[in-house]
Image 1 (cartoon, rainbow, N blue to C red):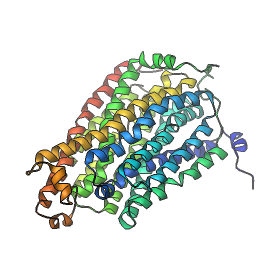
Image 2: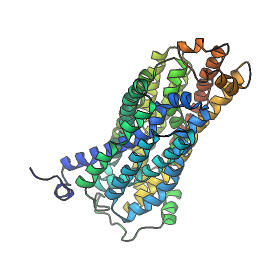
Image 3: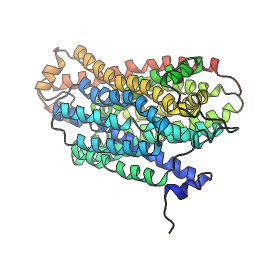
Length: 464
């Protein structure tokens, strides 16, 4: 059998088979990174009860603890990706975050877990902007939004796999083994990337054989090109503001399901995976393909598609979080997720059309810097903060955390809540309504996000 190597695969890089394999490996790597990223959401309620955490502390684990280094290191690593072998950078990154994820299962305290989550963020910082640069050098402008949308299947696939497997593991074996199981397989994908993918020539996919700068443009030059584009600024604002709501809401959905509806960890994980995983896959596909198709007539659809999706998703989210019947609420969340996932391919297609090939990793890293720092960093943290504050206001005895934690009912869910002392019912109700009102409050910014996408369309030329 012929050995599968970067060399002989590279010789076939022009055919569909290699490009399919190329995208498949990158999607699997992205999925692996997202499994490791969102596992804290799947095991969150179990960790909260064992370590007696507040929702703010839980939000920090899923938010700033991961995103601060993930965001800040994205730009420096992207600068390396403009100069050096991008396949090697991705392979090294996945090894780093996989090991740090496995170490989360050994944490003996909240602060150790927080430290390991920082490590996961450091490892993942080298993956996505680098992959964006690779994809844009393998696929031309007319197929780029679709290719980037397919790459964006990674997060929903990761959520689906992590939620289904992680929910079952945490219910039957505890939360610590879940980190071991999801962390180590990423090493296999890193090895496959190193052995089978080649480094494409920069700018080779551009129409008309566009020239690529021999030297790497400075960071200042890249930012100057981006920020002088009004279309980019508006798309960036729409993406960052939307991410604030979406990341925050998504990472608290398993907690919401267990606390408000009394569902078990496995059932909540299954629903979380199906809603965010399957819904995200469908939404990314619809967004990328529809934007590429419609833009053949009018390129403003690259901005209109995210605007429309975000505008549709907002009322569905609001209605879902006001219902007491979980099957109907979950159905609405699923449809909302499809609509809210349509932004990715069109957004990065516009970003990559503004800059030349040696700027693309940096441009993507800049978007991810703000999107993850504000979105994943502050979104879950804000929901955790608001949930604690609303719970304090709703708890009739005052001092919610002090009283409810002392009685062992902080965050309790399901029938067991009625058996945990005189304050159990009041603690449960305050905790459940606190998280519900926090989700509703943060969802309002989706309207703001949609407005910026719509404004971006005014600065996108109808045709190229």
